[in-house]
Amino acid sequence: MLIPLILALQAVPAAPAAGGAQPPSTIFAEPAALFIAACDGENDARVTQPELNACLARSFATAEGASTGKIGYISYADWSLKWLGDRNALPSPFEVDRDGDNAITLVELQARFAQFFSRFDRNRDGVLVREELLTIRSFAPNAPPRSKRR
Image (cartoon, rainbow, N blue to C red; front, side):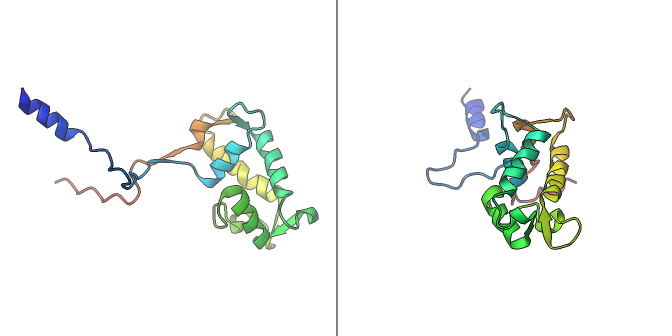
């Protein structure tokens, strides 16, 4: 009777020691997903395309030079830092600037986020919920590769 108990205890993973490293996450949210979640204008934990477009317009208006209708890549990096959390967060200015004029318009930004919206909308109902905005990895980042079975 003692042997099954010992074997069962050995199978339970040990909790990280106090102050120890946090285990790698297998669930995360992309910067674009975090932005989209923040666009929930009705506070119902659901985001529609019109809510997203209105939110993008409000945030775009805060970028330096937005009053001209276009912002340069440096202003876009500042926008990205403020709204996505990092100057290098995706989408990059190169993928947003569809006409290659080294400037980003609100229409271009909304078009790129419409692509994100479509990709995240797994059930194709036109509404994003938090579950759809999470990405689940099948492996922990930086995990050692599994050995090949023979």
